[in-house]
Image 1: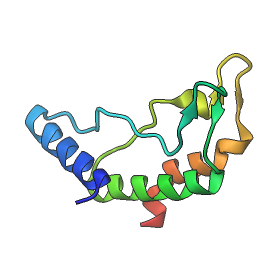
Image 2: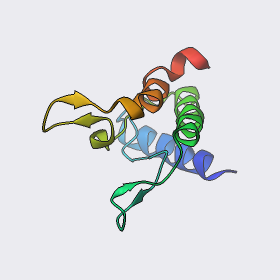
Image 3: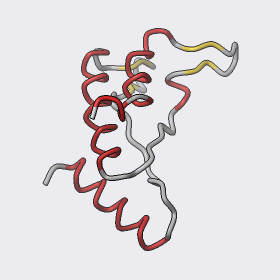
Length: 98
């Protein structure tokens, strides 16, 4: 069983026990370097991970969310980060790719 499958199984079990139909957890298809204050992963890797994770969540019947919206939207000037849009599209449209 992969880490993704294990996390999803735990989420499904939690959802069934609590009757809350969502995943209370987080996932992030990249890692952030505190030292360099930047994302340390090529966008293509982020997109592939987002596709796998979102598809797995969709297949398990779990509505998903990204709790790190700061990676997609600049709240200070109310603009989207264009470089992150390919990942966001995978997250938001995974149902069409399954």
